[in-house]
Length: 346
Image 1 (cartoon, rainbow, N blue to C red):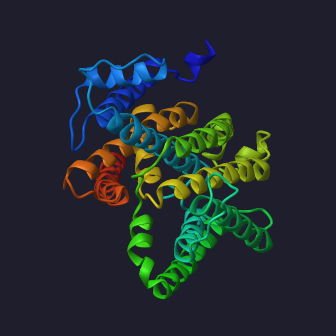
Image 2 (cartoon, rainbow, N blue to C red):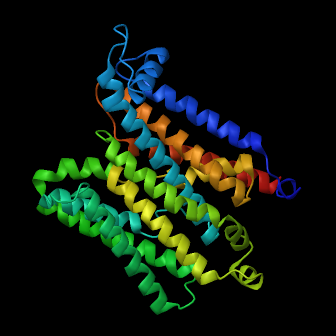
Image 3 (cartoon, helix red, strand yellow):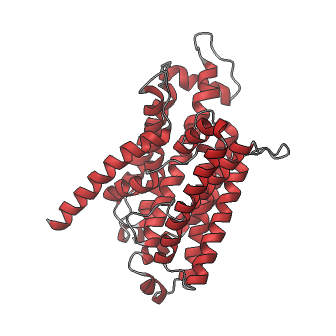
């Protein structure tokens, strides 16, 4: 009975999960070399259970070593970014907020650029170099921004956090330009990475993304009730018993970790966390108990389609996935904004 009162609709999850699975299969099969669905399923099934592959099935390396790990990483990255965007929009009560609002992605980008420019490696760490520094810089950015926000405003108001996040992002942008100036031989590599790309992603990257999403994504989803309370204002949330400061810190830290891991694996991929929650909200409504789980599937679907377009539009040339997501995301956001304005004035 309680589920009915909250408007629980199981068909929404079936719709989103079905769309994500269909697009996942499409992205694994399609590319510069199209492989039949039957052969793809046989390859994956036999490889998982150790069954010898039939002679009729070709291109096992393309599927198992290239496309499958890449598409898994793309799906997990899209899911994480979309979940972060939905949480940030609810927490800050700002439709323009997403996981990048804190400036954490800028910090992660700076760490990765430093690793690329100066060739930083840590042989004893499995996921060294770019991933390690990006994650460390993401954490350092969070600590710096929250410390400054606490010094200026002990209540950690959303306006203070947003303002400091914007200022910090501008500051980091200047540092990135400085690094590119002095590391002229790495300009192409740094620039391509800052546009976002998951080419070359492996199962190790997918494992890291999966663990981060399972742990910190669960933390965010478990705070859906508190995010619903934030939607009507922090004062109202405080009056109904929500520990505003603690919840805000927990969600901000969880979002920062997810953003740091995503940026360290795939670079800066914009608009996923901004647009996808808006599109999902049009189907599920504003209730975060439905919105956040649906955003996981919606973000995965959106980014997988963007990655597929990046791979096949100018084949054999591959576009950075961030370029596609930004171009499509900007158009979709303008449409969503226009539609919402018309609806509010109707």
